[in-house]
Length: 246
Image (cartoon, rainbow, N blue to C red; front, side):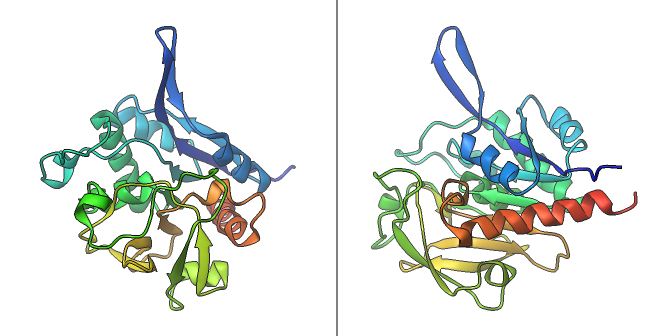
């Protein structure tokens, strides 16, 4: 019998081309990175909280993808003047997925907006606009092509992320204007930028792959082996989930 490939659910953002074309959107780099490492990518639309959980039950792993800003109501704040577009329905659905994944030992990879949702779902807060709210920041919103690395991060050597990537200092791409502010008590910081911004987190006291990164490794993985290792390890953990007896 042919070995079953793990099914990876990727949460969708929203796009509106015109009055006749709108709906769930996922950048194709996510699909390509999962497929290249032996997984089957599927898109999880945000319909409602319950259907999100039912969709996740079909998956062996979950990726929280990038996209819109997170609505600050979910961490008890009013909107900053520079807050971008938000979709509270998506926030609610994805926070439900965070709890589902953690409670059911589902491997979880949270990317860009995803690491922010992970933090908020577990009781943390966000910087709503880095240039306005962070002292002496480096440039975190690049204006070059998506796949290009633009700044350094430093990875904690005592972390799962370091065991995957194998280097303490690496360069990453950067397409965000929000970031983690107050860290959830259930997460630990495992990578930072030179300005002190949190760039990666892991779940404390977990035996299941749960990593959040602020950059976009899916857009670097085709030409950067260090970034591809992150997807390779994630899919391998999803394979283990497939092989674990119910």
